[in-house]
Length: 543
RNA sequence: GGUCCCAUCAUCUAACGGUCAGGAUGCCAGAUUCUCAUUCUGGAAAUACGGGUUCGAUUCCCGUUGGGACUGCCA
Image (tube, rainbow, N blue to C red; front, side, top):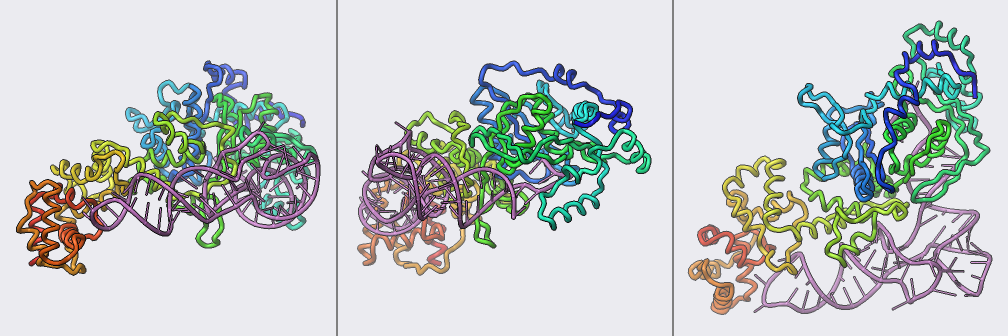
């Protein structure tokens, strides 16, 4: 430990601290929750679109809180003002809403206050935006400064780059530690002098005065992986960034998850290597660390290298949640796919027991997979087909309409006043629960699957070689009121008379009325289309 | 380079140290009085490699190889 710096100097650097740590402890008391209740959080940075890996994190945290009778929070990690993207917070909230994973405690936009971001009423451990928590970070760091556990650092960007280059060329670990930490042991007088040189506007960064020894091992517990040994951290990591007064992730995590009383931190594997630092930080404060669980990544095969790698928020736009929404994937199906990755028994248990569903199936910490999973679109499609196949027709119709109105400009015009016709199209081959057709995957694809029913979207098939005699014979005898047997007998009769196969007659009719060679049951299709439309389309083909 | 994580069919995975290594998706074949989709039946398909420990190893240990993450005043 070094000698602490004086109150006056701290005040000059950071301003007067608003709280004492003891005061914060009182302000954010330990939560009064039943035994075993977990307090979890989803803590994204608002840097653009939501990505499928984020949704995965959100699901796990949501479930762990809910299944244990705990609290699920949303905390926005907006400490990197350079990378912040407008609208990102709205998007995060919107995603939570659409997927049914709304956090209990979260920021909201206050319409009465010009859309200012405030805490949701009842959310007592906020603010939930890190940019609004400066006073908390400053209050904690002030005590560290006073106790000598942290110090102001005047290293410039250029100096740090130089240090990194030197370290790299001599094969040393990079970072500011030991002898490289030039300001680590600056006395109060030296600091004062340096500040005088730099001018009063200059804000130094605040670094941890690390006492870790990398020759020693520190064992850190991960809820799923067990105990992991690391060399102790000796880097004087930045706690408060220079210039903008905001904390780094590590320091914000320490203060936030302590004072928000988070019990379980579930986060991506990319955080595993900072685990020893985080344990060190909690230990230094004398605080109990949360239970950490590091989830494996969601991967893809890189099209350039052919190798498996983490799905990237920056490069893989197909992994964007808004893409899934725009394409009309049923949100529950996406979640079921994700749940089955994190709780692998889900699919099997659900098949055996009908009462098992997405919302009541638990996530077990110890069973969270540790190896990276390839994101499998085909399996997702299967979940979607199953999901839509089990929906009742009214819900299905409603979902398709809602999606169409939101994402397909042409749609509203077409559907208006014809909801019953749409419902009839969607109803085809849905009456027998054991034989429900499963070719609907997304709302978008569902619409295109049944396009030919709409007169405006029907496309005459000019490639097909029609047998006009057959078509003519059919139209003459066609009666929409025929039973399926009568209808089929007429087709057989035509086939016999024209000396063609039954299937040929059917295929001629199919091509004529739908423009396609693959459709569901022809009788049902005709029943939905109605007498006039069927006749009109066939006559159009005959010419 | 350093630190750490991971390793069962193509994919997601199951298997108190004793199973013919199980399931699901995908794929292939057959059946289901018109195509497609369903549904049903069947099929091919895996413990990365090498050492230990043990009567016995997918399981425990070590090494190798492979893959991944981190190595930023980004989170």
